[in-house]
Length: 197
Image (cartoon, rainbow, N blue to C red):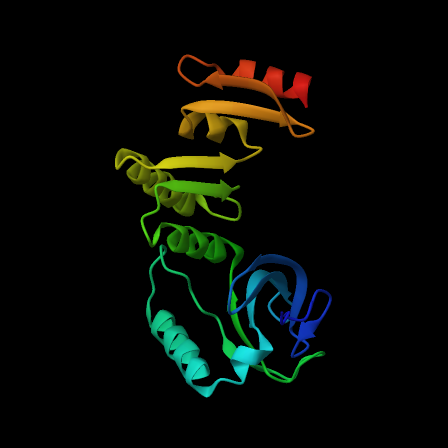
């Protein structure tokens, strides 16, 4: 099986420093990154080298990036740059640079795209501003209103209490607390969390 190169620690075009992988799909990896020139956090999508050699796929990728670059909406991912890196391990890596919050929005949109019944989300509002959090909350509410089920992880106890029907706490892979959120107070959740984790 072909594997994309691990680029953690590389800086594409000596600008986009790749800090840690945050996702992988069929076409590429998404890394948490840092734009050295503008001193801002970004996410960088690096296309797997064998896709970069497919001219038809490259054109599709570039058309999609151009289309998204024309859209200016807080619910749609913003593309900062698309290009080819003369990078450290491959001269054919194509990159699209997104903010961390934009990657979160894009990930949620991709998860909801096919109207799945069950959603599994890990810290769904990490990196989002208040507007982004409100958007996530509205999308999750709509999903459950249509009969969907959501299981999400978070360390934000107040958000868990607001958005959940039930709370489960784990310690070393074991359930140490489980309760419906109806009439459950935040202080109790916080005390319990401190005691069991």
